[in-house]
Image 1 (tube, one colour):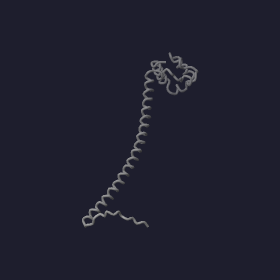
Image 2 (cartoon, rainbow, N blue to C red; image 1 turned 60 degrees about the vertical axis):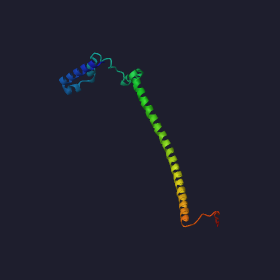
Image 3 (tube, one colour; image 1 turned 120 degrees about the vertical axis):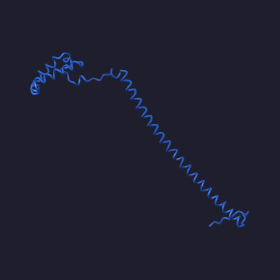
Length: 147
């Protein structure tokens, strides 16, 4: 059944409804309307007593056409690209966490070194102040008192 047959059928059907009125078309038995439709050229092939479910078939040929294959290939590539990007983001997050830990350790070491520098600078300042007031460092090592 092609497009022109359907258009012709719909045109004749509309004219018959207008001429008979809505009540007359609705009052016509179904078998008579079926015979009217069956009389149209090319329609009788599709008006069989077979159930509609049997006409719906999986057509592998449609999948094997180049256009459909390219659509499937494009969809697969987009899916793979999205998966790759997701895995790359997860990997970058893991590396970022490792770098954050290293930065924290480095900051801790730097802070420790700064405290040591301040301590030594404080000792140096005390030694300079002692020299200003005339005190000299002793050559005798200090004595440690233990409790």
